[in-house]
Amino acid sequence: MALTRVSHSPTAVLLQLYRMLGSATAIVDHRNHIEDVIPGASPKLKESLSNLDNALRRAAEELEYDQRYGIQVLTPADDRYPQRLRECDDAPLVLYYKGSANLNARRVINIVGTRKCTVYGQDLIRRFIEELHLRCPDILIVSGLAYGVDIHAHRQALHNGYETVAVLAHGLDEIYPPRHRDTAVKMLSQGGLLTEHMTRTNADKINFVRRNRIVAGMSDACVLVESAAHGGGLITARLSRDYNRDVFAFPGRIGDMYSEGCNNLIRDNGAQLLTSADDLLCAMGWQNDQQLVEAQQSGIERQLFPDLSPDEQTIVSSLQQQNDQQINMLSVATNIPVYQLTAILFEMEMKGVVRTMAGGIYHLLQ
Image (tube, rainbow, N blue to C red):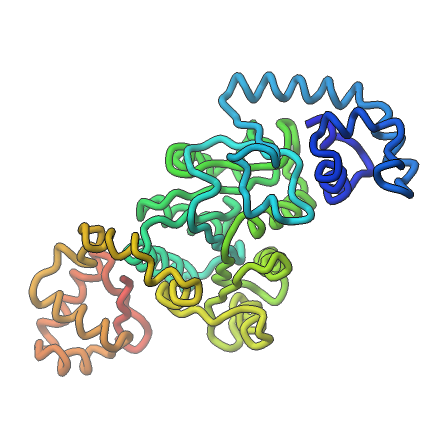
């Protein structure tokens, strides 16, 4: 913990020292002749390591706080430390974690994207996570608790029974943004909060950029939902590729600002095209998992619309075969007169099953 307070020392350098010497204690023991370990070590690094008194005092204060409030302090030597992240050359020397989820779950994906998530993006997230949970109920979902795609991913994960972990850009003594506190509290018992920062660390812009490497490194795959031509989601996607993780992106309509980043990534072969949960499961090789088959046979699969009338179920079946139908086409397909269909569709819209779109077109939401 004290070593993370050493100034002028990139994380990668400290991690290199840690791996070479085997422990933080060994680094401190060698601090007065660190050039024996790293020839050409900078004078600033040697100066910083030679005086750790203030850093050790701060670390002692932090450890006392963490123990008092049930915060786990994880280092690369700890089995609870995310093993996927530990493989990365710039993995944090210390992580602070509060929650119930296993950070080394069998399957881990991150869902990221713009902070200005559109209705289209929200719909994608909801349908994707619902479908994913039906087919593969044991995935840990990671994001960053930010506005937009992040918070929608966390909330849909909670709603569907997934554990979900937020990687924060500040210490665990606060939540940013404050309006997401209620969701963060729920995640403590159905996921968790993770950060590399001690308490009393501000949510500075650079911290948001740096936390993306943790989101990417601890995951098997990155799912980009919506992104402008430049944004944090694209940074996470790039880091994921650098870490040899799979990257997926949902396409959007040409010309839409918040689909431009996704479309460009797919065009440039920086991400695999994603249209459904099945695309992800197939690409990751998770669709034939024996545990998944057994779980489905045990009744984990559920009916999508358990409270629908026979006519409503007929409409759903038609829209599942061909979504976004105009009401006259839907009337022909279901053999339900338009005057009856209008009333039924209104009830279904109130239930959150369909949405009315321009031109009298009905879109199936689930």
